[in-house]
Image 1 (cartoon, helix red, strand yellow):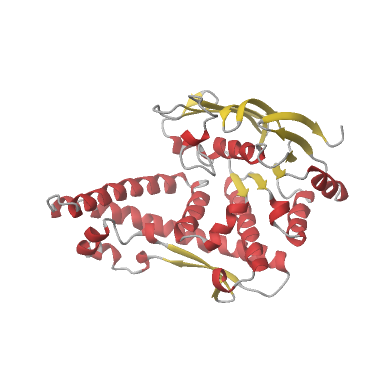
Image 2 (spheres, one colour; image 1 turned 45 degrees about the vertical axis):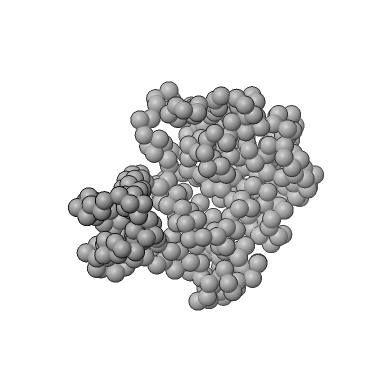
Length: 372
């Protein structure tokens, strides 16, 4: 599958723009703040129905505009696909696939598989456990819709239970029967989530480890250590035994929402003991493994978005990525760079043809193939 055309209306700093993409390597060039990353974020939006950078759609609106609209034309083998995304504050978001609107936005996830490599990926190592859970949840959700639906249901039940705990803490009558009513569903859904995560990791880790070996060319063992309350067989039967502590904390203290994923290098936490180079190699290996796993599961190559990698990665890791591009390992690739000449020289030296898109303050100034 590849993205041919994208129309943006009132999206971030784009008032109204049409962009045509090439089927292979696309270079989005322009000064910092011109809208390069915003263009990638629009591609992310048509895949996940939300921004990779902003927590709410309202923050995506151009200045004081009252709505945003994205329309993409994609091609999957011989089939043309039109995806439309619309948002207006106070109204339900609307997503359609070939003019057919989704009843549930979750049904769209995985239709356009996508992998993003961006400067913020360092948070996967240095940030809180929630970020790593979200990374793996997004990966699994792109090929397993049942998992996504289970996760949504679990989070809904968890939110309601936490709200009740907060009410009790603030003085509401403690209704033990009402609180216990959440236990059967939460434990049932929680066990499904745990089992799916564990099964996924058993298949994902060997791919991740092989990519790391290819990048560093050294005998270093990377691993992903998975910790969960549900590893204790008695978790379900003991769920709710911490009521006093949970009321004080105003939240549910055990379950898959507390799972921990830790990246390990030679048996040690890479966050604490890994060098900067080792951490960068681990992140690239992680994203390449995500790409390969999704490619296998979906029987298609995901879109690959590379945001500002030339400034954030060293020559060794950039060379590894671009060699994969040259070998046609990836499908459609989108690269952003603020230094246009650097990109052109680098790609020309590798004899890599590319489609060039120049962005200036939310406007598409020039679109051409490198051979034009």
